[in-house]
Image 1 (cartoon, helix red, strand yellow):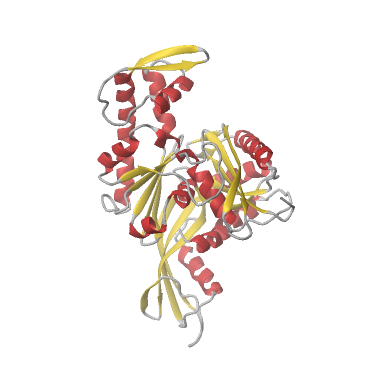
Image 2 (tube, helix red, strand yellow):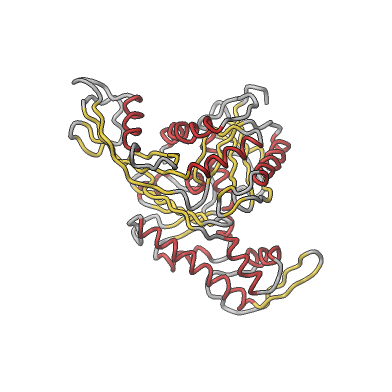
Length: 410
């Protein structure tokens, strides 16, 4: 590959781990081919937010180092995830006069009405990361999906505005600056996961992504081709691991292996002991204890998911059901558990929309990283290595993300 090769990079900055995916973009098809993948432990974050800059900065640097060695590319810029219960979505509307009779609606008009829609609706301590127009109204004509090119004098919009706390955004930007990474966009992790695992038909019919991360569980609801709601629960797979460590009186590292290898979300037909080998020593635990501990925490998590769906007004009303992503989506039988708990069809999502093969890339824990890479591919161009200031990163979150979304419309 030469210096003019286009590449796309997604960095999923999770509480317990950082995952990086590098894709090379074919000039003829524009389909990214994955050429670099990495996953490293993370520290210095709590419930999806940065609480110690050095930990995430070092983890990002380590993840990029592995991905760069595998891909042969030096990573300068990426689309990065943000997470935490501070992420909220709000319905907003706005109206602008766009000109005299015969005026054609253009990009400036769209940008202006989005700004008007968010003005006063989002507190000053929050940063808008996404504006998703649900429908436009032009001179009384309703339900317009895209008014560009139409003529009129009065333009109105109803939109979903996703925002994050400004201090958390600033901390994330500083961690990226310390790792010498320029953010081309900053996106809630669950929306990135949705980009990788959902089809256009599912988004049109009605579907929810439930991303069970290390310390948070995020819910994104889509319907009629648009994002309708985003919510984040401050509870995730690490809570299940910690419960197992306490209940089984063992180390968290062993408990995590028990969770992924022997936990069963549904009722077990025949109880049996679970054996785990760790550092050349074998540990045995009763499956009844494992199931009881895991079941209690899953019940709590999915009760919260049900509340989020109720807030969105979509409880039991999503034809395409639930798509599970995140590391804890690998728990055996979790799709059946979700189906029973939420009264909707459920499946574990696998990332798609790319070329190439890499180890573990089709696993649900890589959905967000792959989705971020796919989003990054929409704007990926060769860029010189440079550090980014806080202001430019905020601009990227508020402006560039809108441009990305307008292209692939999720």
